[in-house]
Image 1 (cartoon, rainbow, N blue to C red):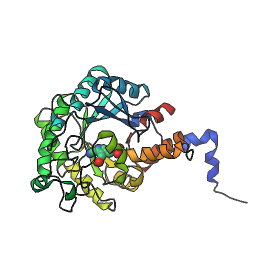
Image 2 (tube, rainbow, N blue to C red):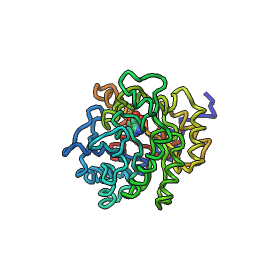
Image 3 (spheres, protein in one colour):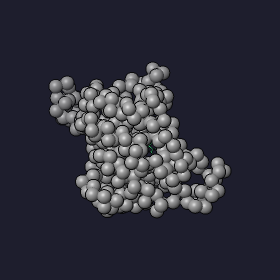
Length: 333
Ligand code: PBG
């Protein structure tokens, strides 16, 4: 055959690397860490093999494990000692994330990002205080279409949370509640408290996804009734993501996140073209759990599929990836 074009020429061993378009570095990865104020021991998370909830006393050793793999950033999630309808432990100066942050900042070089949301702190498991009517009627039968959180009351709570986390030393604040106006409110709150240099990574396009199941077990943040479809985005929508992101950009978001990652790579790729901000993608608990489950059965090779997943997320346009595979993949690079 007289073929002029033979793309296979560039797939040979010594040239593949030179023409590779995407690379994965430990510095691109952020490792989620769960700190639990209700336990004195590390508790394995069953649906997320290899991950644990660690007590506050183990926060520093846990982060040192992450750093030893080459990953430099962690995202802290907290499980508080008690919950109430407002989620008040989320902004307590001696709250679980605040305490862990102080220790990690004091004793390690990790870049600490704190999750700013209320679902792990409210007794009903929603991402903010409930609208009054609903709070009065709150019972498991209330999963009807009027169910929702009080948007503007949540904004004030988020300002308090962000300021308390910054005061504890957090390097970056990551609001994940999909509350309208959350980025602007937090920016104003941080600036007012003197934390002008603390950036905000907004979960700008966070979908109401069934892939969060294992996380909700891990962080004990499942809604006690109803679901999150009145605040998180409809998986059917792509254009709406641009609108959400544009609003967050206007309000001062520094980094824009898409969540989940793999089922939403079209969104990552679209936002990459539309916006010049750094884009983060959250390779969520369900994406992690399903690869582990298949690998357990011998159906997939874990290290290979994990690495291919993260590479695909980067190829789609993400600069940063939050992933439970962070340590394993970083170690293998
Ligand atoms: C809470 C929050 C969730 C996740 C991160 N922050 C769960 C939710 O929205 O229900 C999920 C992360 C994962 O599944 O790995 N705002």
